[in-house]
Image 1 (tube, one colour):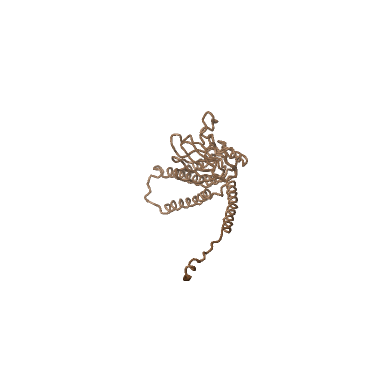
Image 2 (cartoon, rainbow, N blue to C red):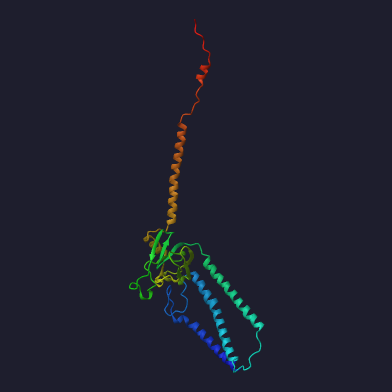
Length: 328
């Protein structure tokens, strides 16, 4: 083994050991917080919804190994070429211009890598696209510079959510906490209908793995299913003006009983659709007897009316009889 090869092996082994140690020690650097940023954290936020689990798998199991291997391979090649083919080690330059085998390899291998990544990528895209039947719909409207939430299924009218002022928010939650959070029940599929009233905004909820643009005049749809109760934070992630950094999103995930109580406090109803259907059915039932009575009355009136009779042509007959002459 030559000096250059030994040096390359030592350097490559050192890089590999450093990368492995960093990967193993990363969880100890910072204790990730659920639903909010972690100071000093280097990993993705812990998953709190199925879509985020899928995204973490794609990132950690598919992308990171491929990126790491390619990075180390390119770095190793650069070091090897710098050592093996420098002017001192290789005073006579090579005379060849190309190598067909190498060119085929560096064309086909990247294509195969991209095809492999695309298979997992489509799997993740389909998971976002194929939303289960929603249990709840929330309309989210981005404004400069706050959010508006509406619950059409429960009859909760639109309300505005602003950032909690600095003097009222905990220090670590400033520009994360909101005065009127979105409230959803745990373990339920929540459909978000996302739009904007002025400029383009974006709904970003890292713990749920969501990032959806809010575009004026367009309604984008996404979904999540929160696995744990708690408070989760997000942000507008589309530059939207001078106060873009002051558009936090707070999502309170609660039990079903707590959600029902919150809906009632907002003047809504958990059975709004059922109540509307029952009211419509009662109105239809009340209208049906009235229609029957009206039809019966009309039939009775028609039966009581005298039948029209034809007039006898007596006068013409009398006029046609001959008149006897008067006696003299």
